[in-house]
Image (cartoon, rainbow, N blue to C red; front, side, top):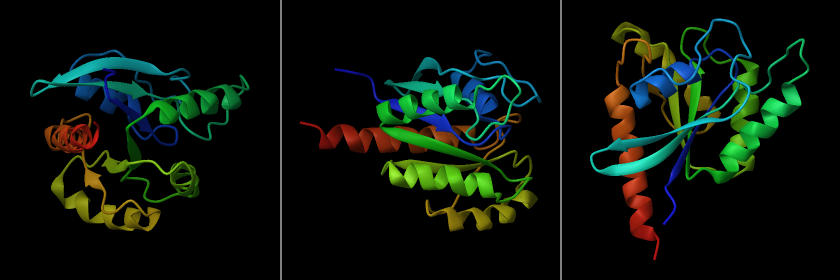
Length: 172
């Protein structure tokens, strides 16, 4: 039986790789302030509460770079979401809702994917109300997390596990 797949997607520099590393519990993906460092899919097998899943980190959707890698990165994102049982859609609570977030949301809706919306970089609880604007993306309320500070990381993993548990009940 194949492992369930969870893909992390979002625009550049929202903290996808930091979140990937936080969930994995080790530095696997390179984390840099420069956009475009993650270009291919990076994956790790995650085990939580005796449940396993493959977690995939992807590059930033809509990257503009001098190496002309936009189509390659977006192809890698498409491959990741087509194999995914669940997508973690990461936005940046500090930047607020930007047009590129809306483009990512449109792509995810077009592919009819199961999505958990995550507002990353929510380093402290007073920032949480800012996440309300992300409900406009159509994936419900965003879960506020801080990959850097591990804030609500465990809650996110619990949500992933709950979803995967419910999905495994649906399968024959």
